[in-house]
Structures are given as structure tokens and as C-alpha cells.
Image 1 (tube, one colour):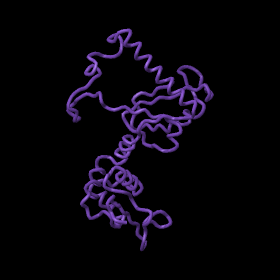
Image 2 (image 1 turned 135 degrees about the horizontal axis):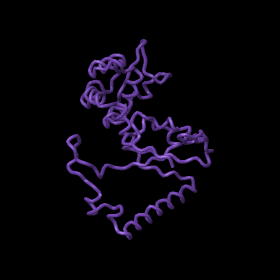
Image 3 (image 1 turned 45 degrees about the horizontal axis):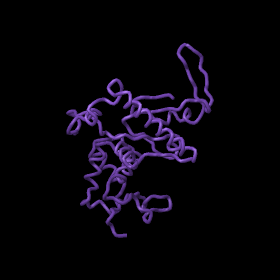
Image 4 (image 1 turned 90 degrees about the vertical axis):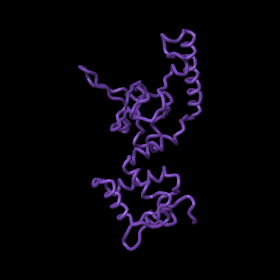
Length: 237
């Protein structure tokens, strides 16, 4: 196994796709480059505090996600935790040797082996076990938006806003966004991507650009102008 610990936010997992599903090139220090065939190539493991930038069919085919909560955490001035919580907070001691007894450590190892046996048993039936992905998708959309866009969109398209359930000229909305968040580098494509992410997390909005309003090209256009439409969940059809 090749482990990449604490994967940086800017490092895209897609850069490793050729090694995940193909031969594995090895470049040892002071040695010659050689290639391991796929059948004997190592698996890769990534640990990170960030959500992968792309969670699509291509990624799903190559990756097995493991999600961990922040149940154990450190309280600092920069976060809103009410307390610091460690393993010892629940068990009165660290669970790893030399703090645990031989019997406790043996029980831990046996539990891990039971998990491995279960995984291998369902793998033979071509079943892929995945964790609940709802929180991962939310975190991904939050990362796509960024704090500034999220704050702007939450006010601009608030529940009592007159900008919901009506056609809005996309160029005007886009320029309003650039002005309000003071970001002249955002492109229309990036704006659309962020807007889709916002609609995905805004629980009062049903959909962006409903299909019954779209033209054949999948957009809302008339009189040479493009529009956007945010339909709320309680809007009449």
C-alpha cells in the first residue's frame, strides 16, 4: 500500500488515476525507474481533511470512500467546539499499547479482522460498501461555493426574496454577484457552477432552471438573452 497522508486541498486525486487503474511506475532514489504491472501494483490510500473536488462516476469507479466524524476534537479559539474530546474521555485511557492491556489490544485486532472478513465476503459478491455520502456532498458544494459566494447567495436568494420563482436575466445577476463580493476574476462558467452548488444546499429551493422552462439547448433563453430561474419547493407548477 502507498499512503499519501494529509492530502493537500490543491492536490487533485485525479492526478493518480493512471496509477489507480493501471501499471505503477516506481522511481527509487539513486536507482533505475521500473514499472509494476497492475496485478501486483500497490493500492493507494489518501487521508485528508478536505472533500475531493470531483465526486463523479469516474471517481466512484476508482475510489472507496471512508468518512469519519469529528467526534474526537480539540477545542481552540478558532472553532465553536464546547470542549476538547479524546479517546480517554470515553475510556479513561488511550486504547493503544502500552496503555491498553494485552487482552484489550487482542480484542481490537480481532475486531479489525472480523471487519476485513466481512468486507472480503461481500466483495466476492461484487458488492461495494460505501458510507453515507450526504454530508460529503454538502461539504463538496460548500467548498465549490466558498464563504463569500455562500453569504451573497443566501441573502440574494433568501426565502422572502422577490428573486425566486421568476425569470432573472443571468448577466444582471452575474454582475450583481461580482460587485457585491468584489470578485472580478469569476467567470460566467464558475458562477454557474457555484450557483448549482448553492441550490443543492439551499433547503428552500427545489431546482435551478426547471426543465419545463428550458429551450432545446437546456437553457432558458428568449429575445437573445439568457435567464435563470430558481423554483422553491412550495411554488405552484
